[in-house]
Length: 129
Length: 406
Image (spheres, rainbow over the protein chains, first blue to last red):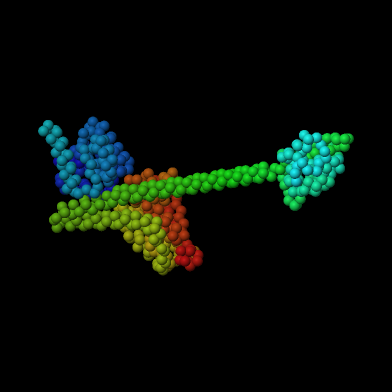
């Protein structure tokens, strides 16, 4: 079973996102701030991370930067899930090494498709396809 | 009269020629100042016949104010000296008119008798030219002054217009900035409730079994809350717009104040966090006459902030006295950083510690705008991480007192 870490400070969005992913049989961890998210990522080593940007106690940019420097989970697919919809913010995210950028509001299917694509890519890389 | 016949004693021909043909008036006087001889030019200058000048006192041809000067200088102490050179001296003509002249006197002895010769030049032409010149200079100076004044006026107008233009540009810039803030805030703030609506809607679609009714209901409630949140954001923007356009006109109705506040508290139940309570207490009279909408705009914004920025109970107090209503909302939440307390009424301002909590940054600006409409005042105390208390005092409206009924 693939595991996903969702870092999102809005309680209801977090709960709904976790629920959507769990219904697709993913093992999901949820955190409500950046620092907590970094700790959970190191501890649980998820297969993929979905992360908000505007958050207390370390924002999404800081989370990505810190995790990318961590050899244990530095290569984990990292997708921003954010209300920051400006192109410049999106470019910043991608330049910092994010694998995807989902702008809120998002459709459940869209989220699942992006998550699945990223996980498939990792699997393909691992199998050297 | 022919110059040959001119009544002068027999002088030598040279003197006679000089005397008769000089283009300057010559008068010769005896020591007493009587005119003994006058040449044709002098006669023409004064408008006399030659015989009329002879025997006349020279002094009488002079204006009164210089007669004594003449007497002292020449009759009492004769010598050779110019009088009136480089100064305007007016001499009386026969017809009484004055003529500007330049006079030079010379004293000499003839047959042991001293004589005074006066040489008189008509300077009226020169004076006229000088006057004209002076007039022209005055006019030119006036024209220059006019030009300078016009230049200054033009410069001032240019400065004024430049100032107006700069003010307009800065206003336009401020307007564009507010518009841009408006769009980006609206866009950002709408995305959270819309995400909840879309994701809950997705989940409702997944829960198709009868026994999953509870889950469906949970998500329907979430959609309701998100829609209320969207509505509240919209109301914030509309309130600011209405306040700015002066579209809010207070209208007074009588109502039960604590009952009204309780209803407003109920309206915000959807925002209350699990375990959080709103505790309300009221003192004094219950029935008041106020604008309900304005009270609602003020209270809902203060209460929603208290709920949003704290995790535990929020306390609401109201007191109605004969003179006013006091309403306070106290929370034990994140507080407002001291350095930012001066800016909390600015449009779109979000304190650093509130940036990640949903909000438009318009609420307190709306509170302030509504309070101004009803002559209310607001005070607050806040400590970061310990909480904030806002206290609003509004005088009872009276026809002439509070003013807004007029």
